[in-house]
Image 1: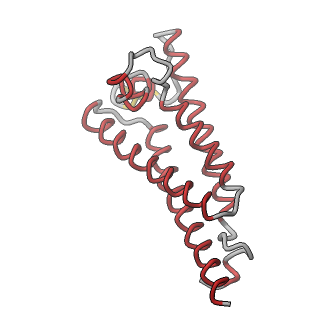
Image 2: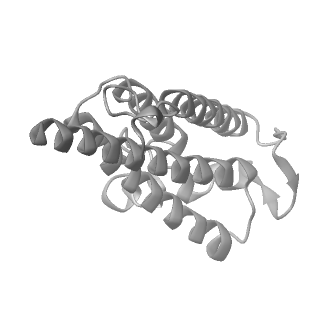
Image 3: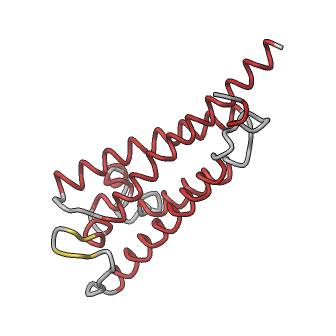
Length: 173
């Protein structure tokens, strides 16, 4: 890539804006998912904006077994354990970390951003399979977060490549 497409620090120029937009959208969607889940728990008749039909229902998904701890945590703890948090809480933590670590320009931060993105993409694929083949549902909020997670992985891989290029150029000079 030409040097004009990278900042002097090796991070692609577009990366900060794209990261902000993706993390902001991820935080909004995760916050909304948490709102829907908590509203549904306190009022079983609550109808979310994302509940568009019987098989297009985000609240059905969020309140399912897989809506907390990816449906896996309760295998090892009780359903009401502090460790069995809604997936939306995990999303809020993930997007906040992506946003915060994205401010650091270091190989270590880039490594963590990429690794955590791979974990989020693996979680997205797992939950997409559950959504389609176990719950037989389509969740607009869920699918939107999966797309954001893939886009963040791409963004983080580009950042790491840019930083590695900077390090290689620095060693060869």
